[in-house]
Image (cartoon, rainbow, N blue to C red; front, side, top):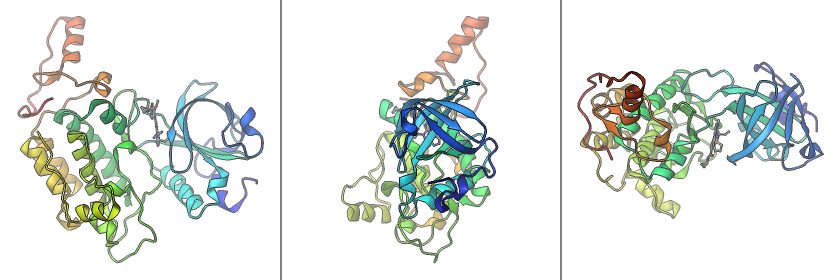
Length: 354
Ligand code: 9ZP
């Protein structure tokens, strides 16, 4: 099969510089091997990439870390076997992701650097976020502190404001799509389901997204617009702060009943502001949910302490904040210049800091 086959029309070097036809090198390049070779080659630009470790598996294929051989630059690559593209809708979905994504540029949206293809696979070359996802962090930590959630949430809101400003709804916001960079910044990834907002009345063929984070109007096919992203973000905030998802019933009908009624277990040990924000974001009526600007201005975000940075250790253990600075910054400053940093008064300290 050549790159000119109909389902691969988007993979012929449109839009993204450096992309083009490619040849998988090594054992994986022979015929329809399921795995890509040890080296990947973008034939269009002649660039070689060394395949590193498997990062995970997605709906369409595997994700690996790769290193561009000459520059040493690292990327995450999504490897999609051509065989999967033949399945109903998959080719279109991948093509849409590529087409939408390659135009997006924002510090809190994962970058799509390019794409290429060889005889067996398509490759999406994505920005590497070396500290994994917020799902990984919550798994390791149990739950996060309110200052940390403010830190991540501000960045996610900024990325989402950009996406919505482009007329796009993400439609699959969840912790495993929130990726953390080496420098502890969070970015929204996986735009495979992103679409222009669908007004009420327009019906979708299939329910898409992650079942536990689907908004009531999405379940009932009453439209899939920006408020559905706010709902999913509310589910993410709940999960970050409490360590469990708000809607978890195993059988689907029961899960959907809980979602429609916005009936979730009251999150334990949260500040009143956090509880109020979650209740507002998880309102069953989409029109009653806050806008992005209203979330940004909510007392949970505007009145609590937000750290400027987080130490990488926060991926594994609770960061200690002394006054309004994380301990590591104070210690670093002590070591460096013998002074204690002056903390900017950014509102009252939160009640919950565990
Ligand atoms: N996770 C284990 C703790 C469970 C990891 O080790 C890990 C490490 C990563 O980088 C070293 C990483 C993800 C998990 N990085 C990363 N993953 C991405 C990604 C960017 N960086 N993406 C960019 N766009 N979409 C995402 C997506 C596909 C490439 N992922 C991952 C989501 C799950 C697996 C890969």
